[in-house]
Figure: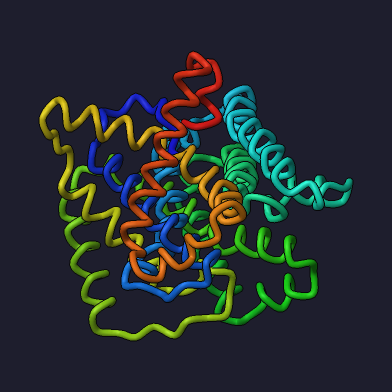
Amino acid sequence: MINKNTGQSRNYIFDLLKIILTFLVVNIHIRNITHGKVNFLEPYGYYAVPLFITLSFFLMNKYFFQRELSFSIILTRVKRLAFPLIFWSGIGFLLKPNLINVKNIFLQLFTGKIVDTPLYYLNILIFLTLIFWFITYLPIKLRPSLYLVIIIAAFILEYTGFNTRFFNPMGDEIRKSYGQIVELIKYASLGMLFGSLVKLNKKKVILFSLVGSTLLLLLIFKFPQPWGYNYSGLKLFLGTIFVLSSILLIGQVNFSEKINKAINIFASYSFGVYLCHIIFFEALLQIFPDIKLFNVSYPFLLLFIYTMSCYTFCFLFDFITLKKLSLLVK
């Protein structure tokens, strides 16, 4: 989910965060599919996509702050996202052949909401990548100001209800996918601003201020939650700032060589787990419906077993295909 070709030294806390967020996402989706009870982990799962978007654009900052960004770089990025979108959409349709028709195939490719709904994340990344590529045609000095304007505009659209009023009359797939783009574009802008921040001389002071102020605001104020598509509201935005600021303030953390390697491997395959976990779980329920009962009694055990099973699948898939199709699971 996060571009690795950044030239920056590896931060294993970022990798560890990806693993944790993957478990949190799977936790939400297991509960949704089995109609189980909400557990204490679920509220934290809604930070996953905003954090992934923010981190992705934070690590792509070196490209988007170039004076002239070659379209070949963007095309490579789009292809990198389009191939898994097409592949996993195909798997989704194979497992749900009753949904195969021209309209659904078109909607799946442009919204990711017909089969294997996590694929909408790839659509969002493609659209946001193209939007921020267009911004590279502006002078570099103007870009940070524009990122701030985008963040403010996104909040105005959320809190005035304009975003939901505009997209709600549209089909379910369109309104959720493109309504979420409007909500998530502020996180891409946030990632770009953080990328600029770490280059400043007084970055430690600023990061410390961000950690302290966001934590204080989250503890003291109860922010109103606008109606939206999962990623609206100030609370989620401030929480994302707090997490990323804290990680950047801590800086590089190296564990033992073996632990670093294990964290790196699991983090690399988190992308594949995110893309495949829903369609496989839905198929599993068709074969073993008693999983719902197991989830009622042992939700966290099921979460661990199933998520690790998805990781194992991704490892084996990459091994069996001789790493020639790694872009589908990494």
